[in-house]
Image (tube, rainbow, N blue to C red; front, side):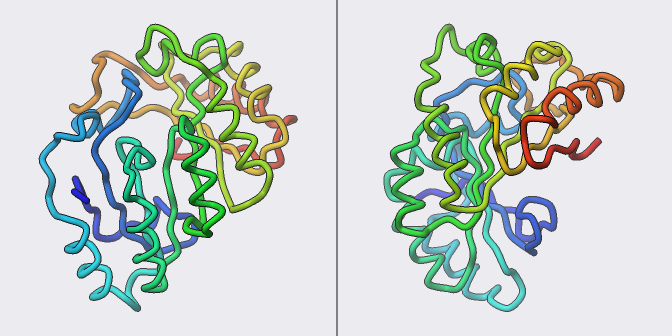
Length: 229
């Protein structure tokens, strides 16, 4: 498997762990605010193969205590379960970032106990989902199925939304609250601009708006916080 990026150490990407973050190319969404737009194509330049990643992890045993996978959309990789199994055999817990569009693949990973923590993006309310992911239309059924799967408690998880002033308003979070009702953890992450973002000129909402959005969602989930503000 081609690996498209590696952050060798992070205290932020895997809650409670000193981890590395592995970046995989290829995504089926086109979110205008994506920070990793260079990874949308699976043909993006790779920095290593999976055997090199495993060699790196063997050398870091005792120094790292987790591996986070992000993208792109990692679940597009057919050979991901095999790689995760090899990493688990080295004693590492694994965190998976996903857009939630592939519930059948997510379920297989959970059934095989290959994932210890899942962070699923919830892009917007149902009505605004397509435009927020950069597509003319979208079938939300797979995303709802992934949400239900995570809420069933098969592994630790969080839902999260990158909040953009141009794409979100109060109605967005009333809709998101309906989608994730009963969730264990939910985080609002204010957008930060980068050179790699697809759509230029986007902004984070102000603090007042963020707090209002948080208050809309809080009654519907066990824990909701603003992260990175």
